[in-house]
Image 1 (cartoon, rainbow, N blue to C red):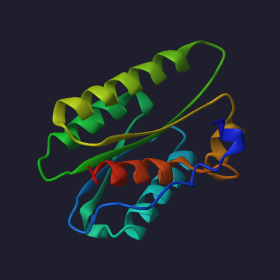
Image 2 (cartoon, one colour):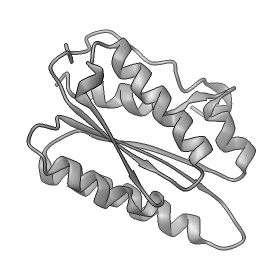
Image 3 (cartoon, rainbow, N blue to C red):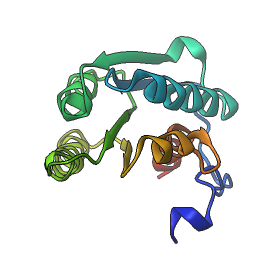
Image 4 (cartoon, rainbow, N blue to C red):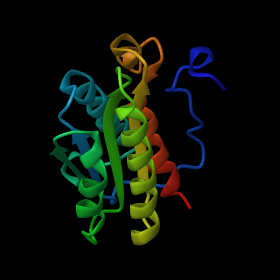
Length: 158
């Protein structure tokens, strides 16, 4: 369903696992920090609402979205981390840089998840404009950080 027809924060909360003893690593890109900080706040609030303990949530920053993959791998290497949430934003520009970054991040995070057999959620906002990114970081389309955290919690339910 197109995002324009849906708020990203609508998800099925049934059958989520007890996450009170789970540890979460959050990797946040510093590029567009006004947006990524809002995504991170949404992710942390969601984890807390589902029973995670604040002391079990670890935030790490990387320079930009391209670096999310290595940041995720550093966290996934830690045995005590149960799931990794990756948050960043790539806004289309005059060149095709967004295609390359988005593809690299998607493939890289999938590889990390499969390599370490841990949930690694994709909280990358990929938009055409800054306005669209803001709409997905707490605006009219909700907060993709919430969606990414909910996906991590859901995957821990398997």
